[in-house]
Image (tube, rainbow, N blue to C red; front, side, top):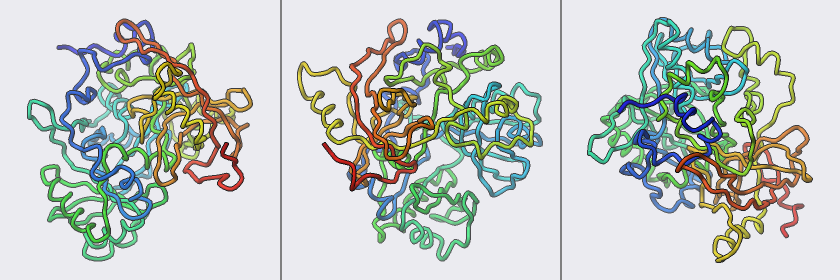
Length: 471
């Protein structure tokens, strides 16, 4: 079966809003990795208890298996660096092997397409990992832009029902938490040395030479390590054995995204590729069964234009990454827009009584038709989530990804707010589903219920423990 393009799917749906508000999983052209019911689970939802797993990166040490779910792209060739520089708002001209950096890409109008992490592996060899939007954007330009570069997808996917395993070049594990350093030192047979943040090193794990990236999560130290995919079990088992005396916890699917929300990571906005004549060729090239065609726009914030869901790098706090000293797609637009008012990222701590009222409605026949709470993570990571957010009755931004964290005994949401919102303010989240879609894929709307929340920093630091009255 030939997969249709994103552009043809948009025309079939009647426009981007009808497409993005629709259910996707029953589409005949959906790739298996976007059809959860067709996948044999590789990572359990829980290894022990998700509450216990959540506490591990705050109190001890956690092991995350990232082998299967992240999309990747390899670039190799004389023009690999130039390709990245032409597409990224940040400057890759000084990039050196052994260093990783964030990549942020925008369209001609300066609206965000996506971000990810680029690893400079060797002189002319890079890899990029993330949600997939940036990798697809890079692949398109690698194939159509006249660059001397070879681009190869490292496709996300676990094991398929027919028994054929999806083999990848590397397995990938993340070791995080206050005791991560002790586990890493034991694995390495001694101190790893002074590895700077977002720099790479090498170490032997389970008899296999692995590369490692120094970074952290929620303020805790850690490493991301990767090695030969065919030796993934040996590498994983060696990490588990080294971590046994330190109480290492394996983190399952239920707890995985909680740490991201605690860390203030805004997973993704709607990629700014669904409109505009200059992007039509990209939409015609882009297969409809990738993330851009499979993601769903959910939440209570209803707009009449898809552009109202677009965001700029300034809105997500990426302004410091922009280097106007090199030419890149969207450079002129970002120069014009850099003095415009921008949103900023915050964390919202839900009012316990308002959260409880949603649970009560879920358990009350004939009660409000609410959007259900799914503990611990309440927003599918394929969704691009936009809930209304008001202060004193005035809309001030949007609330997004939501989770319950046992570390704080709180429900938290990541949000983007305007400059009028201050830390400690009480805002109201419009919790619900605006609904929409087309054909047989319509998502029904729900009642929109108000959830009071305290504005806190991102990464999260609990405020008003003493002075916020819980009523």
